[in-house]
Length: 256
Length: 64
Image (cartoon, rainbow over all chains, first blue to last red; front, side, top):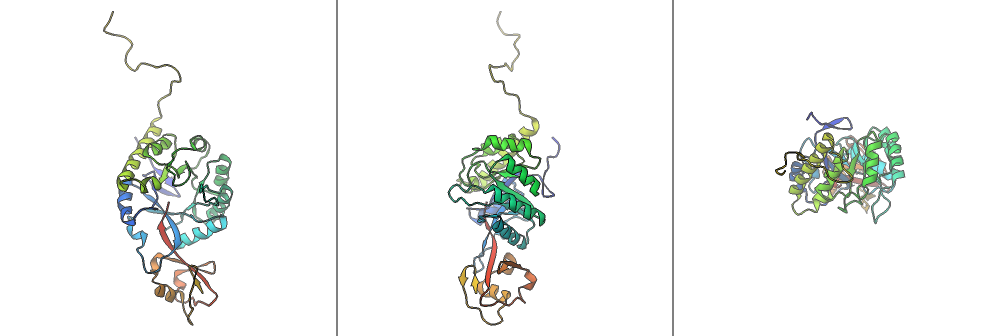
């Protein structure tokens, strides 16, 4: 198999596993990143704690690309504000645009996400919009200058898996940009499945953060994502809708 | 002035650099917004705060 490179925002990655850093102790981040083989990690931007509390960046291995999110934003304007602050923090211009006005299901607001993507892409950000998988919105995001499209599999933090599978497949089939499946993936098998479907990458946080052994689950996801990618590149075997087909020869049986 | 949503005393000729030192914010790991506009790090020492100013000091946290 030749070198399989994941290009995003002009950078080359070999890992297709984007790891979140929320909901677990910063002390575990390094082990999780290492076991995940992750080269991109997401972060949130919040009011700083006074009193010089430990800087999360000290726990993230060097060379890992930071992907700040705009979580907390309720509209495009707030997302743009958070994105600009994140860039001012001096760790590059990648941004995961995340806009929600629904606090129960935490579903993204696609219309505001398109607006923010348009503004931020024009300002030179590598705009990575998190969205509800809808083909029309995805096309709008392409036109707005997104670097990838990040559809949700299920509500954020739910670990419910591929609830939107059919619609993610449509995006994979119709959108030229990388499709990074973000949110809701709860198990390595689900990450594997979406990679088999042709997703470019998987982003996971809660599935890892709420696992019994965080670094070990990061490792399990890494393997699943790699397996799914390899299966996709190989081309899956065909499905026979009815009946079976012997794999062993139908001649030379030990009988007359 | 208001700093991260909390009302604070604003001494005379008080700069953003002095505010960060007083509040214990490490300069390297933060970004500062003054009245909704980002302040460049080079300007922390020369930007003098006023009573009516609204300051936000942000940093990265764990997030998904």
